[in-house]
Length: 142
Image 1 (cartoon, rainbow, N blue to C red):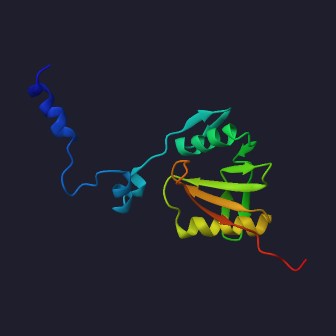
Image 2: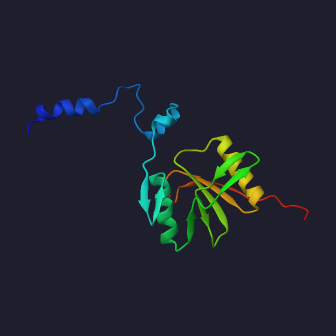
Image 3: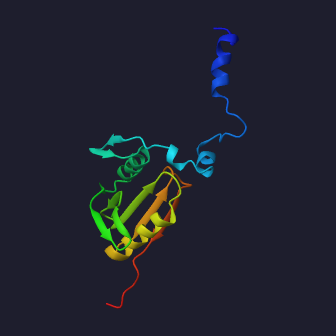
């Protein structure tokens, strides 16, 4: 195959200077809705995204039993269904592909308070550089 045959392919893949070049730039440009999750089967569960499935792989590799979408809640802030419940740790985990909105963070905080169990919200792929926010239940006078 000659170089001339490849020129059209390379031109089709080259982005213009004002087009975001990677996922992070795409998200920062306000195009969050353009990214669609890819449903994935793993460990007997149908995960809504590959990111969720990757966290399930992490839990299984750590020998942490987990339940996916264990139960929904009617919280003060609205209806909510956490992604994972880690039984041994007694922790709810919400997984996001991108940084969560303030509303999503409020729901996680509300879940921690109303269930009296810690709730973690994490975004991005599981890694040593992962970002998490942990909400703990508020102490009550009871």
